[in-house]
Amino acid sequence: MTDSIEPAVAALDAVLEPGTRLRELEPDLFSVLEPEGEVAHYDDKAAAYDRLAASRIYSRLAWGIVPERFTRYIEDALASRSTGWVADVAAGSCVASAEAYVGCSRPILVLDRSIVMLRLGIARLRRIAGHVPENVVFLQGDANALPLRTDSMSTVLCHGAFHVFEAPEPVCTEWVRVLAPGGSLFVTSLVRGRAFGDAYLRLLHRAGEVAPPRSAAEFAAAIHPFWSGEPRLESQGNFAFLTYERAEPRSS
Ligand SMILES: C[S@@+](CC[C@H](N)C(=O)[O-])C[C@H]1O[C@@H](n2cnc3c(N)ncnc32)[C@H](O)[C@@H]1O
Image (cartoon, rainbow, N blue to C red; front, top):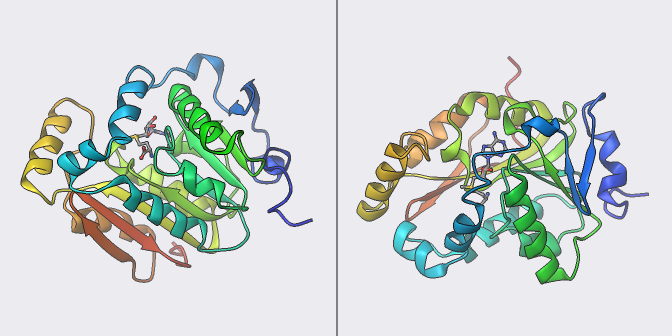
């Protein structure tokens, strides 16, 4: 049996860290966190965030980019291989990714710290596809301590969240650990790039919502120490897209 046709939840055991306690919270939604750790920073603002992120006008005005550009990038990440697991880390409400999941037959782990964001992602997928496809699993977990076995993922994707991580090092370390040798990393981040977006980013930083705003080069430099090989770095508006395709993780 190929991993593309086995329901992803049934195949989870093979990629979850041994000893991980998986709890089904409700249909289509699982957690590896203890019940007392279920509440997350994004829970309260999930609905507002989701509305803004889904708005083309907001995205264009605030960040100088349209959401379809993100969906194309995510489709590229999912199509970078025909088989093997994808971890979509800090996937939130899947504004840009839900459509891309529907066209993909690989097993996809949609991980986020916030149950409320994940619920919105599940609802979005049900609106688009009528149900959560069998190859997609929604999991509450922490990007700083992925509940995944070493070398278990073929693709790690993290869209639109790098700038919210207070310290990127543990997150990057986890990406390197869980990616199988030769696996690919696709990461995007808000970065400095346009006067209006830069001012807005500084405001969000002062409000404690994002890390100190980085340039695209600083974003790439934060990830590069964890990898060998040359990344592809593109930017548009206030977003940067960093791709290490089939990069070998650094050995030390
Ligand atoms: C700005 S939102 C981006 C969501 C989605 N990727 C998107 O582009 O619409 C940031 C997301 O990161 C999640 N997040 C923040 N810290 C996290 C962590 N340590 N582990 C997992 N998810 C985290 C939040 O819950 C939130 O859903």
